Length: 140
Image 1 (cartoon, rainbow, N blue to C red):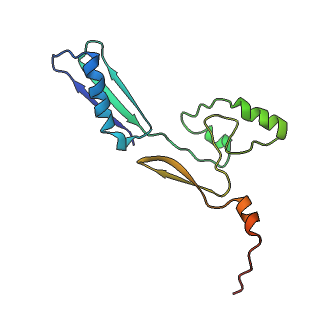
Image 2: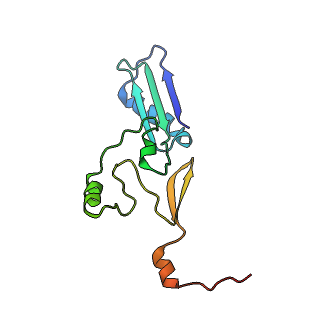
Image 3: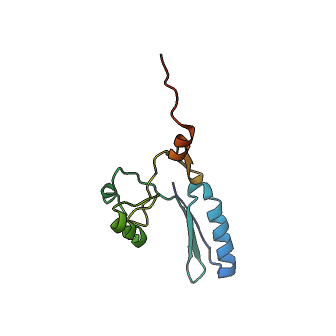
């Protein structure tokens, strides 16, 4: 969900000092439509102004190669992660070989809502499981 607002100034000329706050205010009124980013544009003559709000897109895949089919996917290499992979044949933590791609680690739940940034919640960890020890069996 994204949003676009604008105005056409009927013959009056506005200067940047008036355009920018007005367009920012208009874009802010659309925050619920796209909380991730915004942009404004106005013509040099001061007649037309546009503002937009953007909602980031989250794409999920079981393998990175599946993301290549996602429209607009143009990743950049994460050199630190590539170095880690070349040393250990594994990339620890949430990193991947691309800067724009993150892993969801085991025991983590991802929460995505329209009106807020994505959040992660840990519902299980290995260190906690080791600390608690084996659980007694449930006998039915």
